Length: 128
Image 1 (cartoon, rainbow, N blue to C red):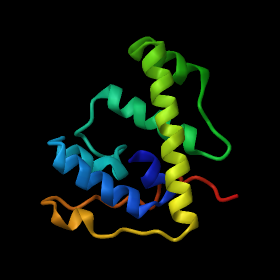
Image 2 (image 1 turned 30 degrees about the vertical axis):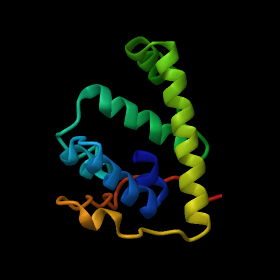
Image 3 (image 1 turned 90 degrees about the vertical axis):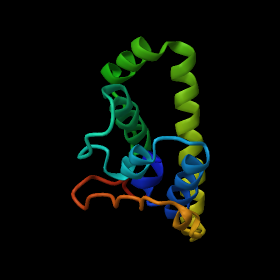
């Protein structure tokens, strides 16, 4: 969802919030992903994972050796590879959706907590 928020894929945010509801995940956290830096609901590891997702999403990427090493130490090699692949897939899906003009279909309308909007001051991935 951090990738979707950064890229601006409203469909991805919409459907993933709906999935969070149906998988009994923490809706307060799910709703705050677009503003994860300002929100106080995330653990330090969750923040680091979203930082990594945004760093991978930036064009060009801005993943540092320090961030990779920290996540490697906290997650282990297999989980870091899985996380990286998942973020890569999220980028593919979000960018394809936005390129084709696919927008929110109202899935999250059935949920109790509306999605938080991304702050205007944060840096978005640059267009190419």
